[in-house]
Length: 455
Ligand SMILES: *[C@@H]1O[C@H](CO)[C@@H](O)[C@H](O)[C@H]1NC(C)=O
Ligand SMILES: *[C@@H]1O[C@H](CO)[C@@H](O)[C@H](O)[C@H]1NC(C)=O
Ligand SMILES: *[C@@H]1O[C@H](CO)[C@@H](O)[C@H](O)[C@H]1NC(C)=O
Image (cartoon, rainbow, N blue to C red; front, top):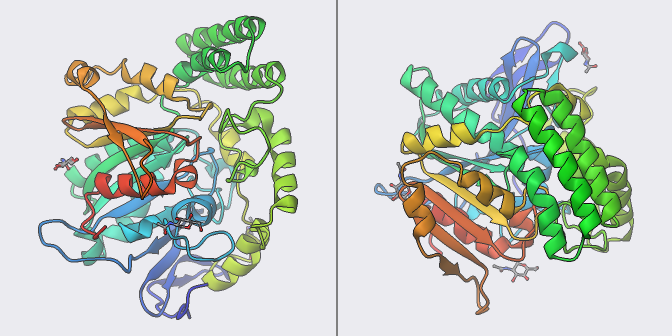
């Protein structure tokens, strides 16, 4: 791991009778990293890991930002996937990542909801069943981390989400604002960024077939069958049969896979099983998990770039560094139990929450990879058009600004902003935008967080 990372700072240490740490926080000697558990409810323990940026500049007119990364799944480990595979300082071979977002902001990773990654519950009844319950737990975590920390409180907090994480982000933002108003939470909310986020399942399931037809991946017959299942999902959502809608969603994924000779749901142009992020991340693909796991292990075996098995990294190497993970907690990339517990909330839209945030003047950024299927840009544009926000008409009428990055002259994306709504179309990226387009993603996070870091 990083040099000088001999643990030392012990902030809180409550040793329970049965021998493991309920609330412990530790960090590196130089203060660049801190991590710990917060008992967000009795017997429900959430793990967090904060990295302080070495690039921090203190500019009184532009406070240094903090990014809270919210992984999807539900049940995907932010501490593992987001940190080591996407935006953290080290990659999954523990080599420095030159595109790390730590250059622009402090980074806070969590294993959310409880039961994900290193987080755990002592009783299976304690998994969250709704996005709101997840948001309440996260708010409790933020109170524990921010209220006691003068320095952090001066940094605006940006909630940056991927995939299912978008549903947590918007519910969390509302919960955070409420807690701030009630005087229970001391922080400044900078904004929300929704990357390829599952905000409106209905709009996504209707986007899949037409999109795949346009790029030759489905034929008319496949489209017809898919539309039938999508309509069933809509009926189920309208009659509030959310768990049934989750089953139908799974059915539709299976149907699309069989009609398309197994299109990759995270990048409809990638067809060689070399998606850079693990297939086992299994975000939003319960229906196809068998195929995913298989593809992932094949990839690991054949990849020349992967020296360290990811499971060994998280369950041996990282555990040893952190020192506070209970011996009987096995880190997993994607928790099936967390997913199942959310089955009744999984298909619920969160468009109204986005509207509430826009009405409150919170900066909302939407960014989407062009080649994603599961949370396709086509579906995102459809739900954005359903917003009741007063600025929508004007927003939709504005021209987009092209984005470039690095030395190349190629178009990397487009951006459109009006008042507090911002939309980035990222070209050449699938579901995992920071992995596929690190250069433009880094520029984007700097702009979103108004980072004072020099470029
Ligand atoms: C980061 O590394 C990659 C591959 O190692 C390279 O292609 C890219 O240009 C580097 N980016 C920067 C900003 O140095
Ligand atoms: C881990 O071990 C402790 C006792 O050392 C026990 O109380 C706890 O229930 C165990 N957790 C799991 C998930 O098995
Ligand atoms: C929203 O972001 C813009 C920059 O994109 C910034 O000028 C503005 O102050 C932000 N608003 C809030 C409420 O943070």
